[in-house]
Image (cartoon, rainbow, N blue to C red; front, top):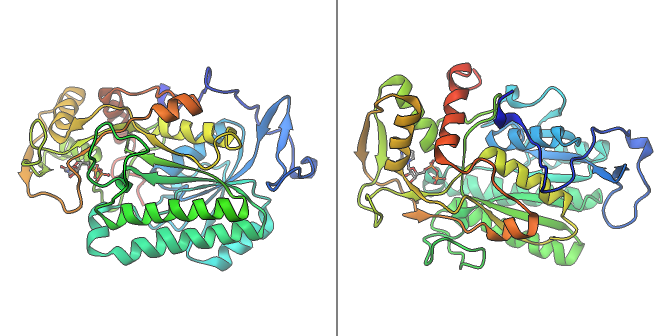
Length: 369
Ligand code: UDP
């Protein structure tokens, strides 16, 4: 196993033992939330990961299993991959827009908490076809919340996005920055964050939202493979392999080299934040946290770094701007650091790209589905 596959969270929190108890040995409920297993001062839960066959979701599911939790993955496999789901997780092929499937699952499963990652995520398509984004990300999310409440499940961690901010007025972006999305993807995620607030106030839902900046990198077994691939780092690495040019979308942004600047954060570090939040949900209920490395890299920086990592002179060409792209998105993540004790273990762009590059030869064309 490479270093990227390790989910140790030493110095940040305890490391739960492997799950030892069955549901029959659960403690009686003490609060609104379902019972949880406690062994030797440790806490383990049965966690539903929606979208757990997708890029971030599969790594989060893996991290939960490593931390000793039980995992159920629900995914419609539209973007997800069956091969990205660990054999030790239960897999439910279903859609969050199907309330009956959700009801059946919650009726039978004794779920303690939900990590909600199932979503439409491609910014560009959200400009041309916004209805998909509002149906899946808002209506599907409400279906999930209502079924959770019906079955007295009151813990939720939500995958939100830096796209809630729109064009930032100040960089690095703090969580208090005004939110004014410039694409339907960001708007749909912001709506759901707001819905969580109201469900928290009225129904006692405990929730944390993570505003991801640019998730990137891979573990030994799990990496980024979208259909179609639209993301920069996999596109750059595919260009390294195929020798076909990668496009630089826009060279006239108000940035140091005219290309867009983003804050790339290792997917393993994102997963570790989720596990910390699950363990500290009672303390930090209702918060939204940025997840980024507080460091911006332009598209051209990424291509240059990828050239170094791969040793290949990756061809690139300037193309028109892509609709819906803000010029600069760089996080302040000091809130996640101070409250959750989150400290990225792989903050360097070179390390992030290297992990993605190592994953590729073992997974030509992604997961082969
Ligand atoms: N980008 C690019 N060429 C590509 C893919 C992306 O120039 O083939 C740019 C994109 O316009 C954006 C940045 O790279 O400025 C990051 O895009 P990505 O899709 O990876 O993530 P996003 O920021 O859209 O979530």
